[in-house]
Image (cartoon, rainbow, N blue to C red):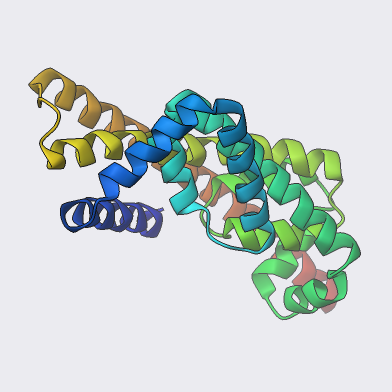
Length: 238
C-alpha cells in the first residue's frame, strides 16, 4: 500500500505543478462545463474510454482522478466503477477464450500467480475480493490472470466490483480535492480555512481507511497463498 500512496502523492504533486505552468485548470474546467451541459454523453464517453483502457492494460489512475475532478465524488465513483467492472469483464473474457494459453504460460512461470490460480478453485469470490483489495497484484494483470483460472464469472464480477470500490472512492475523492487545490493555485477561489480543514481531514480519513483495508486484505491473501504453497509442496513430497 505504501507504493500506491506514494504514487498517488506523486500524481497529485504533478497535477499541482502542471497547474502552475499550464492552463490545466482551464482545460479541466472546460471539460467539467461540457460534462454539465452534456451529462449523459460525457458519462457514457467516460465509461467507454475506461473500459477500453482496461482492456488495453492502460493504467486508469489519471482517468479515475479526472472523474473526481469533472464529475464529483458520487457520480465519478459510479462512472469509474462501471467502467472498471466492464473493462475487467472484457479482459477476463479475453483471458479465458482468446489469450488463455499465453496467460497460462505466464502463470506457470510465476509461483505467486500459480498459487493464486490454485486457491481460486476453492473459494473464487473471496480470493477475487482479497486480490482486488490488496495491492499485491495490479488491476490490469488480474483481469487477464483470473480469466485463465477456474473462477466463475459471477464470483469474479461481484468480487471485483466490491473489491475495487475502496480504491475507486479514494482516487475519485482525491480528484475532487485536486480540483479545489488547482483552483486555489489559480487564485480564483477564496481559501476558507474551515473548508480546507474539512478537505484535508476527509482526504486523510479516506487514505487511512483504504490503507487499513488493503493491509488486512494483503495479510489474509498472503496467508492463503502461503497455505496453498505448503499444500502443493506436501503433495509433491508424497
